[in-house]
Image 1 (cartoon, rainbow, N blue to C red):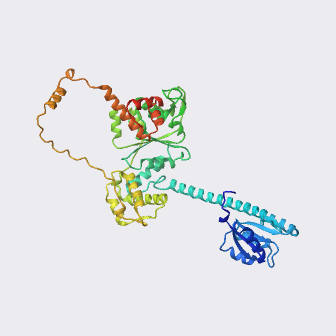
Image 2 (image 1 turned 180 degrees about the vertical axis):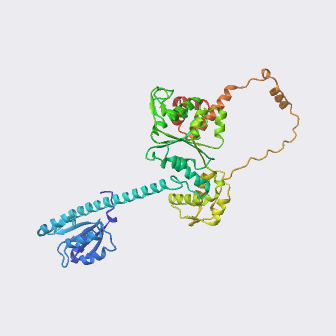
Image 3 (image 1 turned 90 degrees about the horizontal axis):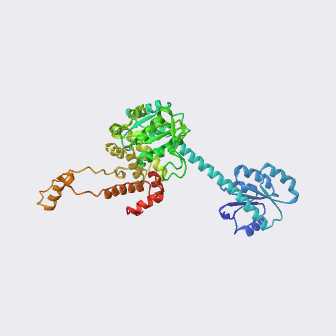
Length: 491
């Protein structure tokens, strides 16, 4: 109660005698935000435009008693707390009024200003709680509705948006495979809607209520991906101080989405094949087998399958993962979809950033359609988000659209003829000399350079979180700190 600003809540005082209203004004004008009415009829008229937290009414009023007035007031303002000022002789009538809900509190006359102030504060606090609860319920309903709309949005989940024949075919294939338990291979360029398609498959399947687990495989190097997928027992490797379930176990009865899982170590290949064929996983360092029911959805960029073949990935694994291939055409091949996608992203970011822009001009659509979109849908989303921020009106214009500059490799300039350089000639002769006669290379420094690059990349990938870097490399944090210090990496 002490945190409430009592003067921010309206209090309506109703009495048929001006002297009584003046006494109320004198006692409480500094403590509460007061409004006055002479009699019930005037008060009911005032309630058409006033929404008070508390209504204080005298019982003995000609034409309309306080109880009769409060009953009608409750119909107009059901949240308001009704306080009745009454004499002891009115107690029988008062009990009926309290039971009917017309009167929330009563104060016997003559009233004491301190006691009545407490009653008013308690009444205001109760109404404030009711209003706050209603506000929270409405806010929760709004967010729930927003999330429901987002989840069912045809672009984000159930149906992939697009007027093109290619995307209608993709949507049809999603509908076909969603109901089955088949593993799916999604092939698409960087920035295409591969994760959107994976989620659409999950949402359209009987597994919808179960987990959807996404694994960005590029975030894990070497054996770290195997540990992330399969988990480990305590002591399985240096730094495994506790037991941990893998992502495959967490996705039990749901879907696991593997984003660009390359390269694959031989051990990881064998483990994945066992999951795909038998539905069994073993945590690292354990011989105990756990059964999992999980659909694997895999995304690859074009050409990765050939790279897998060159890297000697097990043919059985490739076959299992390629049962249902699904190719996403790049955005430049389906320009008729650009308008629908751009309008969706505009709605999304106008809501999120509270921007006024709600449409794109025909000139802006023409400019978007003419662009090649090397970054596909992700680049389109970034362009529209930026335009929604830059726009000051309700329409996106061509000048609000800024595309990402992608520099093209330039032809190297011709080499000018060089003057004779005895030292360079000597170095060239040394490189051309037989290996046995060349000077020895500093292998240790080269290895340090490689380790330094890997650690810097991991630190950038993990946002400087050393604990996460140590976990990904499977080492103790003290070991990581030692290596960072030895390699001169100041973080």
